[in-house]
Image 1: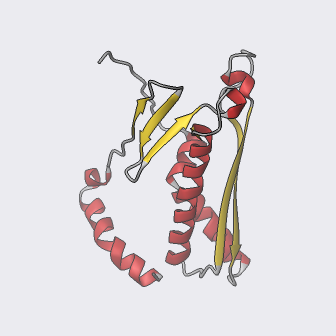
Image 2: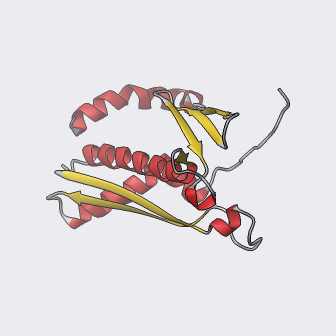
Image 3: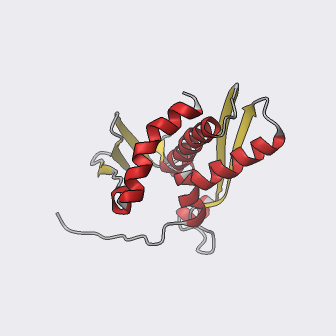
Length: 170
């Protein structure tokens, strides 16, 4: 796909959103069920069932997916798609592109060993390695726009305006 095809595909969508801003608001959903056998949660991905469990650093077997890894994987996926979309839109042909993310956790917080230790990632590093003949200014623009339009990056970096948690009896 080139920039002309991308613009043609997105033009009617953008017009609809301009004409009816409320139509741009969409609720994405994820569902899971608690596994009765082990300490795990079965997450419906829309493609397959993903089973998340404890990380080995907290006593897990390593056979299930780690939700921290899944967060980084979601970041890599979103950043990669955004990078490719932006590169296409601004005519920066990529010969190759690689995206990686790593994050640092202190599991003392997660396990309640140290009440002062944070729960969650203390630092996340997102890296793009690209092979392109574009000038540095274009690559700088590509990075800036990728950061700007990557949903997962922006959500992790800035947090949502509101976060509601509830529990109800079934």
